[in-house]
Length: 372
Ligand SMILES: *Cc1c(COP(=O)(O)O)cnc(C)c1O
Image 1 (cartoon, helix red, strand yellow):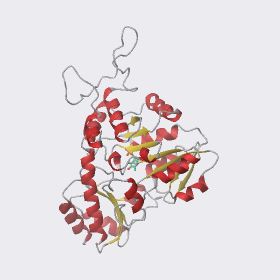
Image 2 (cartoon, protein in one colour):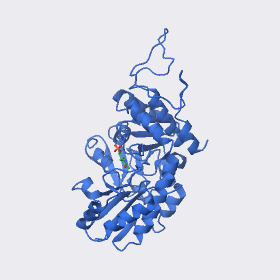
Image 3 (cartoon, protein in one colour):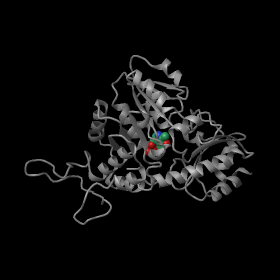
Image 4 (cartoon, helix red, strand yellow):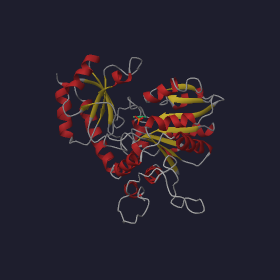
């Protein structure tokens, strides 16, 4: 079936006595055992599995064209679970422009157990120079945060295969609707479901999706079930509900993202626009090849310095000045001050998450904020 159909139906798992059209929320933490000790209802204890989480995992495995998925209580936990599943002493290659939360994890929580190189992954050939005897994982993020760099997933997948490495892709900015890294050769796809998958800025969650049932995936499932950083049945229900409109929301986010990027690109107060849909974006051709459209995330460098950027984010009225992304409401933020003093993000960078408001209202608002 096509993604629009799967998004609506793949998470509707079972029939109830009351003949519900959409699945109810199962709050029970424990499930009845049969006389022979079995669990014919399919669930034993809700940390291990529960109907709402199974529904969420099923619909996302389907949409990403994988074979299985593990849902977590946040995107950070999803990524951390993969890092925890690696043998101590393993070497990871990660992008220099990695989502800062993961960079922090690798530099603090895993500083003593994993070896990490942060590499410019837009230069695929460069990758060979960093592969060592103990390298086990290449982690990519495309489009990346906050510079919207694009990594060629197929090209990196070829290198990973040559060397027997696992390729994981943080695909949060694309959502399962704009690209499917598994079809391009990735082994594991990660999303912060807090973003586009949830889409309404009211659920925190994360997901890993796998291309194969293998030893690494068994470890990941074990950490999920024994570690227990799982989303609640209510959170899972909300996400399954949100996913039904994901393909159409992504069309709207992409249209607004493209229109804002084009508008800002010709604005006299803007120096640079980072958006993979613009033809001057350095990896535009790769983006065109691996994405169906370019999403609602863009960053701009305003002319001037930190004060000029801060003035703009303080002056908008319709955009909410807040971190995060992927909701129906447009957000704007001065990224460097969110990431803290050791950030490499330019001080005049503003990150925008284009929501689903009418584009004329968004442009009018950003225009009045830019013209001081
Ligand atoms: C938000 C985000 C994460 C982390 O997810 P949380 O749900 O906030 O824990 C990871 N990667 C990217 C690209 C993100 O935008």
